[in-house]
Amino acid sequence: MLLPYLNPDVVEAGLDEAGRGCLAGAVFAAAVILPKDYRNEQLNDSKKLSEKARYRLREEIERDALAWAVGVVSPREIDEINILNASFLAMHRALDQLDMRPQALLVDGNRFHPYHDLLHTTVVKGDGKYMSIAAASILAKTYRDDYMLGLHEEYPLYHWDANKGYPSRAHREAIRQYGATPYHRMTFNLLGEGG
Image 1 (cartoon, one colour):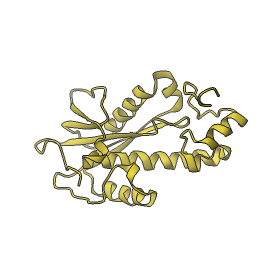
Image 2 (tube, one colour; image 1 turned 180 degrees about the vertical axis):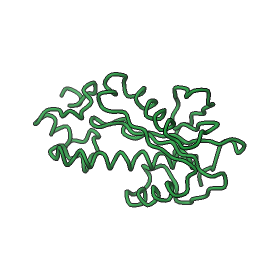
Image 3 (spheres, one colour; image 1 turned 90 degrees about the vertical axis):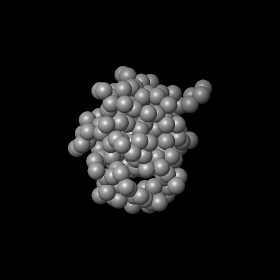
């Protein structure tokens, strides 16, 4: 059972990202503010849910949240500022789009760049501990998956419909055979060790 909030006296936004370890595509992040009395027994870390469950929960989160938004940072920007900074920037972009301003942030992970004057708490494996972070992980993951499916239509040889840009054997073999696309992160080790 996930915890509803860290501090019941403030409006908290949960934050999480998806796509940090990918070789191709943008990194996505989501910010979600849930109602104080929110309960959803199905909410969990997106990695522990089936694809079908993630998309069903996305509809519920978007319907029930007080506010939610998704931020995106492109592969070119990732190459310019590095993936850690790009993950934080994606979170900041999600926060910029929220319809209401949170008073505090719950961030998945152990590091974060402060956002304006808001207090933030980093929580390792937070997507398995707090509902708002779990909700953010589901939105970030599903919106990124939709994006990668769109890129797959453009570049089907890289199997992004299956690997979503992560370094699978088929993905790396396609890079070896056909080269990199404009969506690949050129500062990443695209071919793996000794590639």
